[in-house]
Amino acid sequence: MKIAYEPHPVSMARKAELQAAGYKILDARFKPPGAVVAQPDPVVETKAEPIEPTLAPIAAKRGRPRKEV
Image (tube, rainbow, N blue to C red):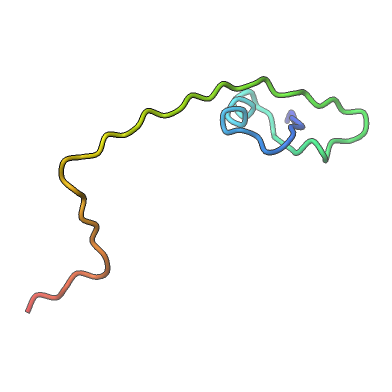
């Protein structure tokens, strides 16, 4: 198994990329002497589009349903 020593925190995109390539991710501070720590490629994260509110409000049910008498 290949080991990638990455400085933490690792972004979710970088983690998925390394796991797909077959790497196990460890924090860079645990690397043995002489091991090379690869600097992560910058990941461009996009902002999510805003969600439009619905017309009808969602009524959340709380607690147990009442017994029918």
